[in-house]
Image (tube, rainbow, N blue to C red; front, side, top):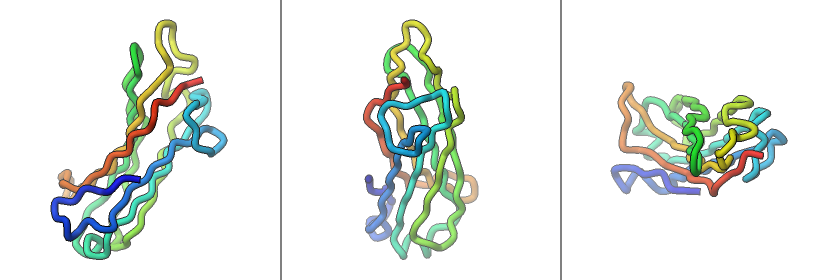
Length: 140
């Protein structure tokens, strides 16, 4: 869990963002079967004051960067409209074979995965965001 960054400290507490990387069986894992769909589940909470003042939408996006030779991949993204509430959630479904399975010769099959929460209003990125970085995952 990380805190969501706000440009004004009065808006921040309690504002948290969590993300979980799930294997094809729906359980969190650090060894993923990229031959099947995997998911990223994200949940976040903002303060009531922030909920009253923010408009626009949230974007949750996941990226994977190979450790050593291999691809850098946008795993997926979803948008969630702000609705005046204080809690939100989203699931990114990563289609099978988005990451090479098995890794090509000379590639490690190890990846650094990050999930970004970004706030947009009128199409413009605001200063409100959060980043969850996972430990290294292996495609196996």
